[in-house]
Length: 273
Image 1 (cartoon, rainbow, N blue to C red):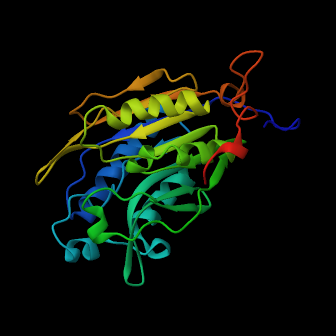
Image 2: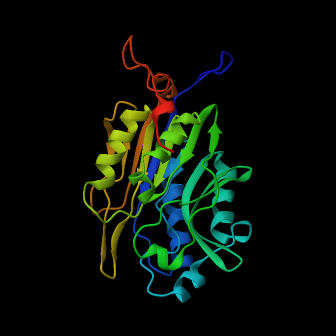
């Protein structure tokens, strides 16, 4: 809940939808850099969200490809590039990344601001063939802040488990960043609308486009507000930057009417763990 000394301003936020190339770390870094710099000039936003596995691509054919495109977070050239941009323009960036830790690989996301990496999240719910390559996430759900606006992260298939956005909401998130590589029409899009409404949070879904092997990514990145309404949406097959103003006061209000409160009415003594 809002503390008396917290003052909220509108937060301008963007989702960047583009087409990464499988196994092309250098090319994808350059593309992301250009997209970010162009977007910053046009939108003057404070938060930018990129898709899942934005630098490596997604549809790996073998473990060698995963290894070759993985990055140790504190040595990552991708993260270093993002930190330079974040420092130059005083912005925050959330992106998916293929993380390596010793001999394990994680489908991860990092949050970066002018001070560097402020949060690393590892996808809890791996989807389909991801289980052949990645280790399930082992870090708790976390929150970071931009000017008192509290922000959480989930990655792609995490949306299918309502405990994840609910936990982030209970931790105080006003916004959930949702890097994604969606290939199933409607699924996560409908889900995020309901998660926004049920948890009274904004969700920034940043998807990708393009084809990798037998997968066609379906774009339609979107930003939904705490009532479940879509306030910005991209097309299904074009590289786009969508933006919206985030009003954290709307996400602070968990009252549905004078009788019902989204958080206080929870009957936790009857829920299974």
